[in-house]
Amino acid sequence: MRDVRDVDGYRLRVGNDRGRDVTNEAAQMVWQLVMAEDGEIAWDMDDGSRMVLRAEKQECSTGSPDVENERTAQRIAESEQNNAQLLRERDSAQAALSDMYRAVTGQSPEWNNDSDYTDAIAEVEVACTLWRAVSDDPVKFRRLLAELENFVSTDAAADVISERLRQLTVEGRTAEKDDHYSNLELRNAAVCYICPSLAESHWPWADKYWKPTSARRNQEKAGALILAEMERLDRQKHNGILPQ
View: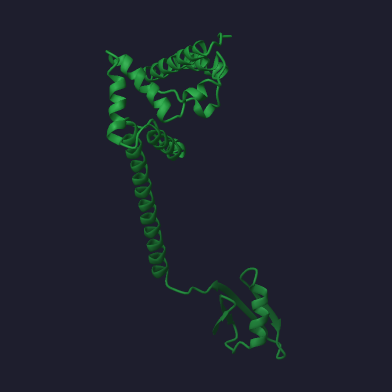
């Protein structure tokens, strides 16, 4: 016969070979035996016979496998939906930052992957601050940019001027900051963009400011940095300071 009991989260099945009822004491003995693994226990009876008890344990289930599988599938589906929603919100936030940047500067932002977005908010804040310093009127601000670009006659020159304006309005590379550089920093930075292989040994600033892209774009940055250096030297000359 078999005796089935639920104990401590396990289902204990106890059977014997004598067809007799299994006492609580006998079941407890077997339970102690099989706590580590399934097994059996035997002893001699008063009438000379031998009693053998065999037992096995199983974890008690609170629900059928089908119900548990359904719950698991539901949790996975909810997790996937939440992840998709987070990605949509991230993409919307990135698009909003790009739109703000473009509205202020008239240019598309340089960040083009997820990691670059760590500095995107700071760049937009700098651009907005400089924008307000020039004019509170966005139409007037963009007209000023267009007028400056109209002073040049070729696409190449226009691109260099545009990059110089970006450095001023977005990166905050103002004349006041440039005047703190030595004679070599701006020129070395320009050289690195012309010949990127020299950046490891000649880049004058922190690595996070080194942002090479295409050859054409690198040349635009180099040209703008050369302009910045020429402007710095002109200011020194105007103030009676001889170049070192």
